[in-house]
Length: 214
Image 1: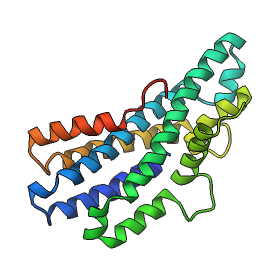
Image 2: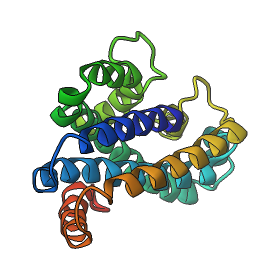
Image 3: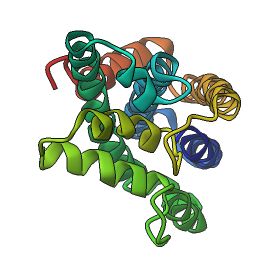
């Protein structure tokens, strides 16, 4: 998940930079709001995702199996809330990214590249679309999973085909994504005035926050 999102951030940053050359500041507010929504969705994905893999390394199923039944239940309930939020974010993120008309107007090929990175056309589960679909399906159609099945969703989120988490790879991907987010935000912040950025960021934050109960 983390490497796929990082590729998306790089593409959107490129499109945003090209867009800024063609528009006046007064015309950028709605586009900046869209980009800030994407920023906060990704930021939350990274934070919750990092916490999930850190708590469950190197194998979520084995971590749960070593806990007492009561502790396992509490841990799974916590993980389950975060996993469901991740599914909602990824679903929203895919729609927001592919719906950014300002990018496609300036660079029509970029929209196709975004779709390729999301992985709609790939018949594999280890794509952003495949991961998001699995987590979103879990949210929309909850079923009674076993403890092992619930724990396994963390591996799915991390893009693993098995239960083990490749923590060296995952940590590297997370750090790369964090740096990409910093660069993306620095680009977006230049598009409008500081006061306007603060106003738009507040709106974007409210529109992308999934409550703890979600």
